[in-house]
Image 1 (cartoon, rainbow, N blue to C red):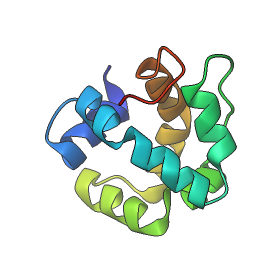
Image 2 (image 1 turned 30 degrees about the vertical axis):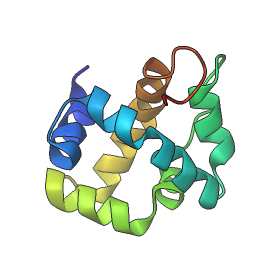
Image 3 (image 1 turned 180 degrees about the vertical axis):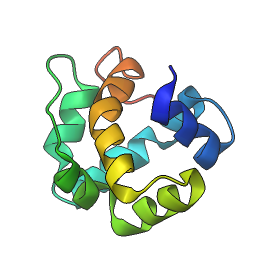
Image 4 (image 1 turned 90 degrees about the horizontal axis):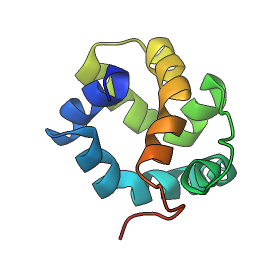
Length: 104
């Protein structure tokens, strides 16, 4: 998988997207739950259609601290990061949870 998700994995984890998602997927879902968007993250993990999360809601779900770190590490604007993540993150999470459950 290329694109932003692959770039983020390098910036955040120093490894592949699988490492980023498998080690941080539970934390990501927890952050979405804490910020009122757990239903979207759960839809990405579970089997079935993925709920879309527009950039404005994704910004709230991710949180300003993570977004600022991503902006600094990737050199992309918040707007570009959010646009790309809203397109790519649901499919990436779906790919790493093929059984509809978070990895152990």
